[in-house]
Picture 1: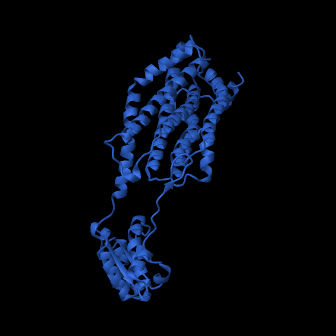
Picture 2: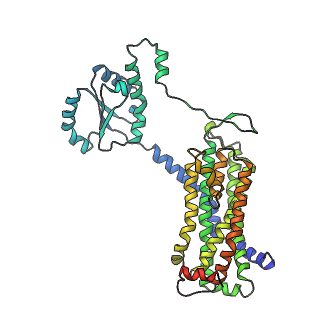
Picture 3: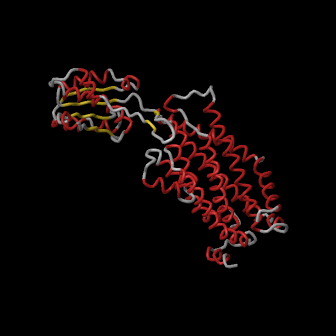
Length: 419
């Protein structure tokens, strides 16, 4: 199968792709796009509402006074210019008062009302009345100061010194230490999670871009009759093999540029990251990601090329590419889900499953120590999948690439397998 004619096709593909504007543009823009996306996300998270007005009502004068003292010194109240109006009233009085100020809440001249009943000193349940009560950012901001006031009030008449009180109202600070067989136990920050995000996004984008470019290339050559000229000197299987390997080598070069650029930047002396965000990139990990990616790319590009050979235009081909897109999109979301907990029960299965292992395994191996046999198994399973699928894909490609005109039915495509 691999002969001088296939080599000529590979050279033609590399000459057209490696020096194309699309390759140079995506190679330069994708890392910048990642920075922009994460930057915009960070900016959106940091953009909080300011100058909000609240009423804080309790059933106890002392509790009201305690909230007034605590909130007047709270940083988020000063920084965001929050205005609190403090009141004390019973539950029945509060119900009447709530009806009186309902119009203010509806027209948002009053952002919300925080009601702290006396029972909160036992169960810590407070009530928030607003036009948008499910405000997660506000709940996060209020949680600490409100908890401090309730803890102080709860222990006020108990024999505890200030240090014991401070300990009681303090939150828990988790520090993670990585334990592995080969390395010393050491503290680990969030750098590897950032690295897992980067791997996941780059692999996802590359599979989609290279796959779509291959699909477009096959459809254009078929519709322009160029393929008929090429097939006068090579066999359809040789053409398919050359196109797949050419596109896969192009994708591998692009991914190598991205990953080794990341390695060079984070290991340089001028790139100083906070201790919690230090990236630990091992050369062996990068090499494994590239090998795993290349094999996965061969698998996916083979499917995209096969679909391109069936149809004459991208609109008709969309029905055939949808299942392939799902094989890329679903692992993308699985990889993101394991950032929260890499030991989820489906993580190990997804990192070994054909197709999904291309994206999930790199994300998983940056977060935990994956057994060597699983790393090898993921690659072998994808190779076996290629061996199983490509004879079928080759038959479809051989017939479909020469058929033009009306859109073929899927029943016709299945009949091509018997030719």
